[in-house]
Structures are given as structure tokens and as C-alpha cells.
Image 1 (cartoon, rainbow, N blue to C red):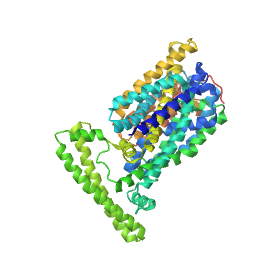
Image 2 (cartoon, one colour):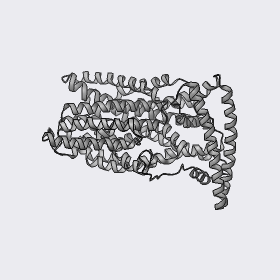
Image 3 (tube, one colour):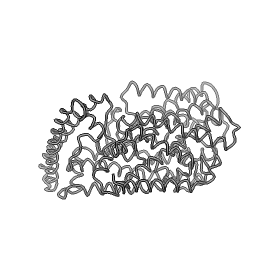
Image 4 (cartoon, rainbow, N blue to C red):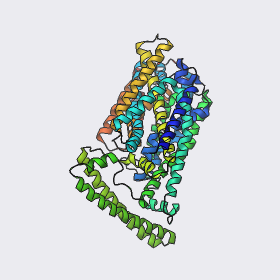
Length: 568
């Protein structure tokens, strides 16, 4: 990268962090530090929620997913508008009327302290793991750009972000999100335009998309009923519905956002903003992945996008095999390019028979390219001893730093870094809030003054930053980062949601039923994860259903509910 690009990144990040802290108020008080004194406007809360979703992990992991398999992941988001409506009608008024700091305080008032603490513990572990995956995304970017190892880049990102979060509280997080949302959308649109311009002059965008369609990459509906298929219409409308209900309705990183709104109505409006815009924005991210696939049909791609592993094999005793594979790969890529051009010409001609023939020829060449690439990946795994190697997360950053002009590289990198820092900051704030409110103040010291609690919260922020960095080092090699996050979340989210559904939706539920259901839900999801091939999105439904069913049965057997809060 050029000095101009680095200057753009440094200037933007310095300004956005300074301005976010500048706009923070009353951060010397608990309510101001954790909940912005419940004073943020709906549009700021809405943009903050959306910015959390459009994180660096989305820009890197989801674009890589689009490059590799196409638009199928979009099916995961079809249930989001439905989930937002349900949350706005149910969870939002309960939480706002309860005047709580965390979602899990509600569970103690409704059930008991052990149910609250166990649910909060599940949140802390699951969100801490997911935050590690989010840190991995920009770490991947840095490793591609300047050759730093993943450990160093994880720490370079996490520790400064922890400091920024400790200084400004949730207000700094929210106002930073507002700014970075605009930059992220601009960066995505710019990348999309650059990819379309990068297509050959003799191939139109429509013809190129037709080529992508022949590979199945434009398929956005899959009605398969096989439970082991990861992304289908059914996992996206049923399984993912429970994922979204849990994430936006019970995860402190999201609940904390709409608890900062001025009123119930403004909190609801902020959620509806996300419901309206998430799917179009997610489609934009994924179409960038598809466009990268098309771009690399006509511009020779590297055999491996991860330059560190590429160099490791070149320096090994098996370098000769690797060079031979590169020759095969170059020949296969050239043949695929010729087949793609012929398919585009057939599309222009309108000859149906020619299109069918050329589509078959192109897909045969595509399989040939993938076969050589699979051989290269197998060689990398043997040389490095890393059986989990996958370079899908390196595709987008490689395109950015090798094919975009000076200045635009800096803007896109700034968008990725700012998105990562803002997302991590929001999650560290939520982890700190739950640690202090649900554990330290509840079990260790309930008489601490505000200054003491704020000091403890800052230590908690630092602890979670280090924890997430350790997870990030591991998560960076697990494959598609967007899937890593969802796999982490799906293990816990369904069971957590089940407890809240009992609390709000079943008046006869009691603390014994809720706690028993929670234990049963986690046990069943653990068994399903370890012993079956059922796709992870279904784990959310399974966990919620088991917790609710067991909770109802045990509650009926053990007596009436215990509740310290009135119905809203």
C-alpha cells in the first residue's frame, strides 16, 4: 500500500475515534457509561445496530463466501424482518419498562439469581468467542497487506479498541457506528463499481452474471428439505428466525443498543430500520463476492490467496511440486477464460443450443480449475501440518490491495478497520456491562460506588479484549469467518432464547422449570452438534424448543411461577 493509503486510514480512524469520544456525555456515571443515559435518537441507534451487522467480518467473510459458492447465504436473512417485528412487540417493551442495564437482570426478577447468572455466563462465553472471530477479519487483512503474523495483528487491533471503549463507553461506540456506516456503504458501492469496470470490454455485466448463473452462484432459493444442507429457504426462514430472535432479542450486545433509545417507540423504529435494509445490504455484499468470481475469470487469480502459506510451500522441500501445480493452474485458468468468453458470445447471439453447449464446456473448465486448486490446498496442508487451512477470507483483501487504485485502497481499508473496531468496541462494552452488572455487582460487591464500578468495568473490558484476541488467533484458520460467528452463536442462542420465551410467553413458568430447561437445551444442542450432521442454523430452533418444552413440563410439576415484576 502507498503512503497516501496509509494516510487516509490513519486520518479517518483518528478522527472517528476522537469525535466519538467528544460526543460522549455523562460517562462518569453508570447509566451514562453503559446506556448513554437512555438518550440516543432512534436513527443513531438504528445505524449503530446496522453497523454492528456490517462489520469487517461481513466485508471479508461474506464476500469470500459469495466468491466461493454464490448468493446462497442470503437465504439466512429472509426471516430478519419477521424477527424484528416480533422483538419490537414483545422484548422491547418488557426490557424498557423493567429499567434494567442488561437483559439478564430481567431473568432474576422473573425467575431467580441462578437462572440469570447461568444465562449471562452463556452470553459472556458465546459473545467472547464471536468477538474473537470478528477480530480475526481485520487481522487477515493486515497479514495480507504487510505480512504481519496473525497474533500480532490481533493484539494491535484488540488492545487499542479496548482503550477506546474504556474511554467513551457505549455513547462513543454508537456515534462511531453512525460515521462508519456511511463509509462502509460507500466502500461497498465503490468496490462493486470497480469490479464491473474491471470486466473485459467485450463482456457486459449482464453476460457476466449469466456466466455466474450457470455455476449456481446466483441461486437465492433452495427448497431442499435435507437438514444437513447449510443454507436453504427453510433454514433461513425457520432456523434463522430463532437465531435472529435470540441475537437481537436477548444478546446484550444488541439489547444494550436499543436500551439507549429515548423511548419504546424510538427503540422499535431503530429495529425496523435494520429490518428494511439488512437484506438489500447483505445482497450487495454477496454480489461483490460473485463479481470477484467473474473478475478472476478474465484476470488470472493467484492459485492461493493466502500469500503466507504460498511462500511457505515455495520455501519447502516440495517447492518443485508446487511450481508444477502452478503451471497446471495457469493452463486451466486460461482454458476457463476462453470458455467464459465463448459462453458470453453465445449469450449475445441468443442461440439457445449454443448457450447450453458453451455452459457445459465452461463448467467443465471451472471444475478443472477447482481440481488443481484442491491439489494445491492439499499440498499446503501437508507442508504446514494445518489440516484446517482455508483461504476464503483472503479473497477480498487480495483484490483490494492488488487491483484497486491508490486512494480507493485506503478508503476501503479504512472502512474495514473502522467497521472492525466499532463492532469489537460494541461487543466489548456489552461484555463489560454484563460482567459488572450480572456478576460483580450481583455477587461480589453490591455496595460499590459508581467510580469503583466504572473502574472494574474498564478492567473487564481489557480482560475480554485479551480473551477475544486468543480466540481470534484460532478462529482465523477455521474457514469462512461469517460461518464461524454463526456456528459459535447457534450453539448457545437457541437455549438462551428459550429461557426468555418462557419468561415472557408462559405465565405459569417458574425458576425450577427455567433452569432445568436451560440445562436440557444446552445438553441436547451439544449432542446434536457432536453426533449429527444437522446444519447449525437448526440448532437455534432445537435449543429454544427443548428449553421451552422442558421448562413448561417441570414448571407444571413443581408449582406456580415466582415473579417480582408486573406484566407490561
